[in-house]
Amino acid sequence: MHFSVTILGSGSALPTSRRNPTSQYIECNGRHVLIDCGEGTQVQIRKNGIKLQRIEHILISHLHGDHYFGLVGLLSSMHLLGRIKSINIYGPEGLKEIVELQLHYGGSRLAYELIFNVLDAKDNGLVFEDDVLAIKHFPLAHKIPTIGYLIQEKPRERNLRTEIAMADGVKIEYFHRLKKGEDVVNEDGNLISFEKYTKAPKNPRSYAFCSDTKYFEPIIPFIKNVSTLYHEATFTEAFMDRAIATMHSTAIQAATIAKKANAKKLLLGHLSARYDGGEEHESEAKTVFEECEVVEDGVKYFI
Ligand SMILES: [Zn+2]
Image (cartoon, rainbow, N blue to C red; front, side, top):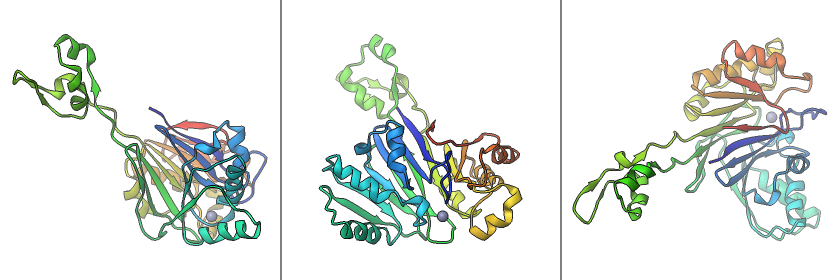
């Protein structure tokens, strides 16, 4: 069972040779999701060996250019490469109009359907759900309406204790119900207990994306106990005044949110172009929350 995030861009407004604008690719048990699509995202997708046409859902956080300027290019390439399968795009109000206007004046007609889903950036709720995952959204606090996302793996089936079940002569036809946590009464009237023949599965994993935002405690209930939290950390403490003025967070603020939300792991990104590495961010954040690291472009992190 696979759940990972590949960082395609970990920079902020100005791209650098080390960090592209924001984009992330999430694989969750056979589902493929793109979060944000800054300029250069499709090049990063190629460089990282990701299959473009597998992407089924694109989640856009907000309409600052470093989070979506790559979107029309990506959608056009999907068309040129022969896509016919529709794609779901979620984001704040205005995104649909912007994309359609760009396509319209370029005389572009896509051979596949764009299914836009406008999310209310002030509200929270379910974005998408199937039998593998659920995607939820919640409000962040930034200069313009901005959406945070939570991707939750669905609870998995219990694990069969195959050897014990076989040794006791439990019929294979009962395995399916036992794995679902149901007791079975066999044809002789004997109870076959799921607790005896199965083990509890691992806890479902989850991933939260919080960029861009100022320090904003109201997000904590939405991301409580998350397995991996990605939180923007545009600045270090020395630039707190810039963080306040631009409604971004410092590394220590991101770490404080991770701690209060009881996250297992924290990934820091959206670093200002004034920084080269992220050593300062990481050491500052670790004074509050030990399990953290600054992400790098082109690296896959397991949830
Ligand atoms: Zn922004």
